[in-house]
Length: 416
Image 1 (cartoon, rainbow, N blue to C red):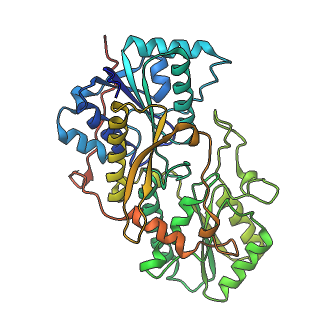
Image 2: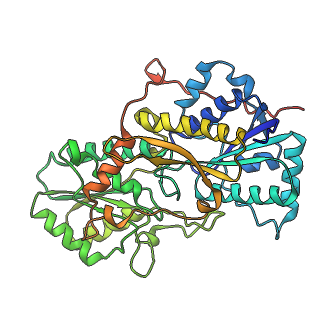
Image 3: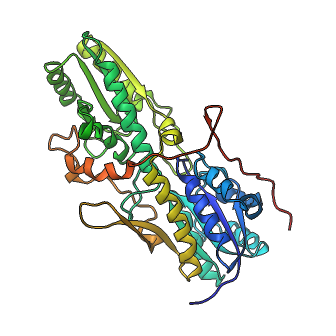
């Protein structure tokens, strides 16, 4: 093993989750226990923070285990996040030279980036440039996303807690809708641009609680209004209160988003359209077709920040994968993303492994065919069985006057 001594930096990127700070806590804990890492820094707002030298020191802030514990149960990205797409080094070598000059200034030899698909692209580019320039650094990606769409891992940190929130909220919505006899349709819009993993979680209550949405529509299947109306008509024959879960990214066969007419048309730095309005579009279409009471509900950012209903399994695994990234890097690994491997058998368990970063970056893991029913309007029992273990267990955050305690990182830039 090639020993490498120096400082480490960790950053967060992309959309926050209820578990991203648990992973951050894992990285910090691992770094504080690694003899090769002398100091651990935090990049404020991800890669942008490094380029702007908005770099804070984390070690002194987490000298007490109770501070790490509070961070574990804090939602959102405590270091701040960004959605910055790094150019290729061939087209913008200046950005990379500036970035690596700053890394050298702070003697950064370990780089940990917590994020989703686009963030893994950053890890891949930095790893490649470091290799080209013979800069001795270990660059590691640590996955996170409520979307559960990162390739190479059984699931992503953050997904289990979001799935648990969606399942619990959907059960509550269904109970509420069932109290009236007046015919009505409720459409619940759930996050998910290209993959319907979050919307799949709406089906979980049927396993033990006896309720589930009448229908579930995912981006993995083309959406057709005629079939949609037929489904609703069939549901009305069973009961007066119809509840439907839809992914925000459902599309027609021609690729156009169902909610496109209600959207701004704006895109982010990665070229992704800002999605919203799918529920409103379906609400208008249902009202016109059936002339019945109809409402749409957009769960919005509550799906990713509801730490009060976090999954113990998710939080525990998120800490572990952060620590594992540090241990792997100190053992010589670089240009890797940490990943979960589910053990075979009926009893749930995972192993944490490192995979080539290029096998994960810029790829999307969609819901597989065996998890979607033949009609394309619901999910199978195999899908429910896959998700349920990820939502198990309750966390025990600290409370004060009935409200959970969150940890706020001091982002004052370090002075060398």
